[in-house]
Image (cartoon, rainbow, N blue to C red):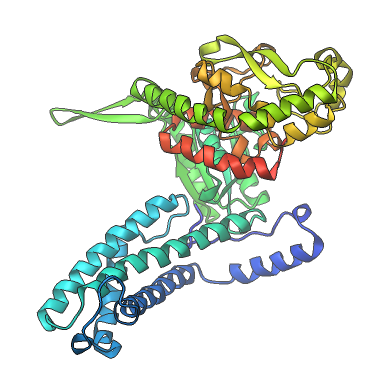
Amino acid sequence: MTTVNNLNLTEPTPQATPAASKRTISRLALLASRVPASLWRYLLIGSDAVLILLAFVGAYALRYQAQLFISVDPAFQLPLAGYLPLALPLVIVHLIAFRFSQVYPYRPGRSWVEEIWRVVTASTASVMIIIVVSLAFRPMLYSRLVFLYTAVLVTVLLGISRLAIQWGRGHLRQYDIGVQRVLLVGAGDVGRMVMRTMVARPDYGLKLIGFLDDHPVKSTTDVGRFKALGPVENAADVIVQQQIDRVIICLPWQTHRTIQRLLRECEQVSVSSYVVPDLFQLTKNQMKFEELNGIPLLSTRDISIQGWNLVIKRTFDLVVGGLLGILSLPVTLAIALAIRLDTPGPIFYKQARVGRNGRLFRCYKFRSMVANADELRDQFADLNESTGPLFKIRNDPRMTRVGRFIRRYSLDELPQLINVLRGEMSLIGPRPNLPSEVEQYQEWMKKRLVVSPGITGLWQVSGRSDLSFDEMVLLDIYYVENWSLGLDVSILLRSVPAVLRARGAY
C-alpha cells in the first residue's frame, strides 16, 4: 500500500479536472515523484519532532504563564531555559516510543482513533521516563504538570497532524496522486474478497486497475469498475502496458507453479508482488485461531451479526430508530402534506422487497413518482442508467416535483423507520432489492441477504447510485463480514454529510 514512506505518484485522470487544475496537479505529481521515498519518512519524523517541541513549550506556558488549574509561587518558578536541557531527550524518547508503539511507519489504512491511541500510549510512557530522569537531577524545581500538559498537547498536535495527512491524501487520491496501481490475479472467492476491501477502504491508497483469471467467463466479465483483462498468461504484458505498481495474486495453491512464475515476472520488472494465502478457501470469511494443548487449530468465524451481536444491533436499531422517528415527525408531516398537495395519489408507496434470508416484506417509502409509475416503467426501459438488475434514471420523467426534492436528500426513506421498528429492516445494512432483481443475482452476491436490509449502508456513504451494482454488492458483503457497532455508528454519522451533498442521489 502507499505510505508516507513510499509514495508512488501517477498522473491524474485527464477528464477528472479542468485544464488549469490538471496542469497544477500534474506539476505537483511530477515534483513529488522526484522526492526520494525515504525523504517522506524523514519529513514526517521531523514534523513530529517540531510538534513535540511546540507541545513542550506550550506546556510550559500553560503551567507558568496561564497557571492552569494551580497557581505558581514566584519563588518556585523556573524559567524556560531551565527546562531546555530536557527538550532534546524528550523528543528523542518520544520518537523511540513511537517506533515501538508502531506509530512509525505511518500506515494510511489505520483509523485515526487507532493512530491517536498509539500516540497516547507512547507519549504517556515517554513522559513517565522523563519524569523519572528529572527526579534524579532536579527533584525540587521541575513541575510534573509541565510533563503532563506535554503529553496532552503532543496528542492534540499529532492528532491534528494525522487528520491533515488523511485529508490531504484523500483529496489527492481523487486525482490518482499518491495511489498504487494494482493488478489482481485471480477473480474467485479470495479475489472478490480483495476487491470488496479495496472498494470499502480507499484510504489504503490502492487503485485496482483490473484482474486476470483463466476461467473463460471471469476473464471476460468486468466486476463493476474493475476490468477483466484476460487470462493469467497476459500478466507480463498487462503489468507493462497498465504501469502496474503492485500485483496481488489470489490463485489456489494447486497452481503453485503459476504463482512462482508470476512472482519471478514481477521481480524482473521491479514490481511489488503479494500472494494471498488460499488456505483451502478459508479466507473467504474471517478466520479464527484456537489451540488444543499447543496444537494450532484454524477455522472460520460465523457471520458477525449473530448471537449477542444481533441483540446489540437490534437494540441499537430500536433506540436510535425510535429517537429518529420522534425527531423527524415534523418533517414527516410536512412531506406528507406536500405530496398530498402536489399530485393525486397515495402519500406512501408500498412495495414487496427481499429481506433477511430471502424473506419478503412490505417496504414503505414516501411516494416520489406519479401514481402509475410502475406501469410506465417499460416505456422508459431504454433510459436505465444503472448496471446489473437495478433500474435507475438520473432525471426520471416519472418523478414529481416534491419527489425530486425528497429523493435528492433521501427523505423518501423516512417511513422505513416503521420497517426498522417492526424488525423487517435495520438502520444500517444492504439496501433491500425487489424479488425480480434478486432472481438475477450471481451466486456470490447472495451473501448480502444473510443480514437485515438497511435504510443506509456502506455503499450509500461511498457514492450511492454513482457506483455500479457489482460495487454495491462488494461493499455490502464487506459490511456483512466486518460488522461492528463502531462501523454502524461510523456509517450513520457519515450518512449525514452524504445526504447533504446529495452526490449520486437519484
